[in-house]
Length: 111
Image (cartoon, rainbow, N blue to C red; front, side, top):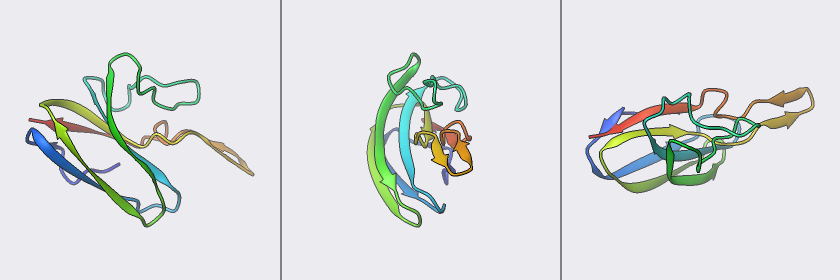
């Protein structure tokens, strides 16, 4: 998760999510004063969107590799975190942690 800008003015903010990877990803926006790597998670490392200290705003469904999608949100001033919330993946060679646990998150400020 790499936003083009780290902040935007309050009001309507459009996020254009582009999946440059080779596997599906999600785009989730949540309001929180927590650090991007300190969101509440379940035992699988998936962010608990109803957990303490976090207010879920919206999300985009899975975006396929090389795909894109966008969402326009009416945001109030504050701190937000943008992240991918796909669960751990099982593979023939073992598992991979959730995308959030792999560091797929970024801080975003609305002024």
